[in-house]
Amino acid sequence: MSFRITRRSSLQLAAWGALGAIGGCRNRQVAPCAALSECGAPAGPAEGDIKIAFGSCNQVHYPQPLWESILSLQSDMWIWLGDTIYADTEDMGRMRALYETQARHPEYAKLVQRTRVVGTWDDHDYGVNDGWRAYPKRAESQQAFLDFIGEPTDSARRRQEGLYTSYTLGNGAQSVKVILLDERYHRDEPGPEGDILGAEQWTWLEAQLRESSSSIHLLGSSTQIIPEEHDHEKWANFPKARARLFRLLAATRTRGVIVLSGDRHMAEISRIAMDPLRYPLWEVTSSGLTHCWKQGHGEPNRHRVGPLLTALNFGLVEVDWADGGSVRVSVIDLSGERRLRQRISLSDLTAPT
Image 1 (tube, rainbow, N blue to C red):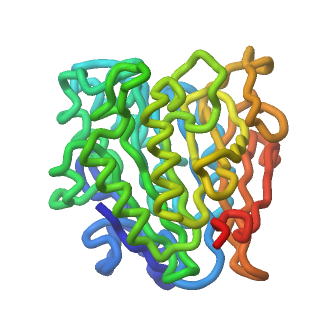
Image 2: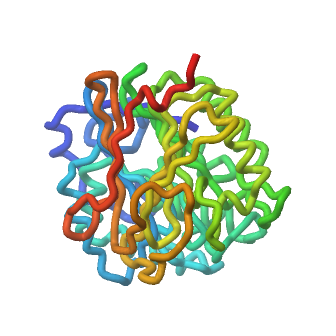
Image 3: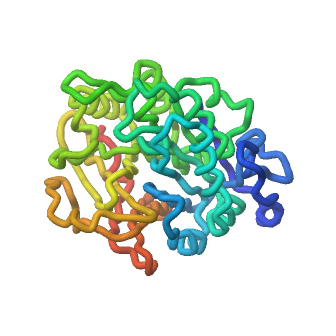
């Protein structure tokens, strides 16, 4: 499933309706949105620079002090990258109550009114810690998440198995494609032969990459793809699936791929350059919004660029099309300081001819 998003006038921005009941289309416009059918704030410019904020790991009953900083950036899109709530339950009533609590958070409600909010899940909003395809309430949990995110009731995303989807911000080469993976619904148990995405999602992902005209592709992954050494959840626990992903990126010659990930209750920037990848792959991990892992300072990651951050944080991607184009990725803390940052030229994200 894919959406194209274009900029609307600033007058429309003043016309968002108030936050509706959970299960409705909370990002509804007063005027129809051709890009997103029934639902969605105008989240990306048709021309000009693009700004996307993202984050993960959000306990709804903890203080949520980062929304003011997130709002001040006036980003074109907010991406949930997993653990939007901590449900860990098969009780859908309890899960929906947690989503409703988050939806009614005053500062988050302001974000929903002003910015296009999209997302995917990880294990705790899926419904079970380290969850995989054996979770018996996955179909019901999917509908609860889509209700929270404001997905239209007639969306094809509600009929597929899994939350994977994509959005395009901008037009032609001056556009960013956001590809959100579902790493829970079809996931096997970890192991050398284990899969993460499932056959249908792999086919969908290949089509998303091959048919794209965008210069930048943000691959939203709820778990880390590049890091290999820590003992927690990661793509490296599924070596066959990870190698398949790298081969797919190489075979499709997809330009400008940057991974955005969450899950870890800390933040870092990673980079890997290896066969079969045709150019270095970067990953920005941002976690968490309400809690962090203070003991994580010594965690190994030979692919890490710069320090590891163990403080509340969110991520930001800023695209500048001038002078050949560049992407600036940052991780921002509670004070608004960009604690991690990296500028990447588009020329460095293109396979050699």
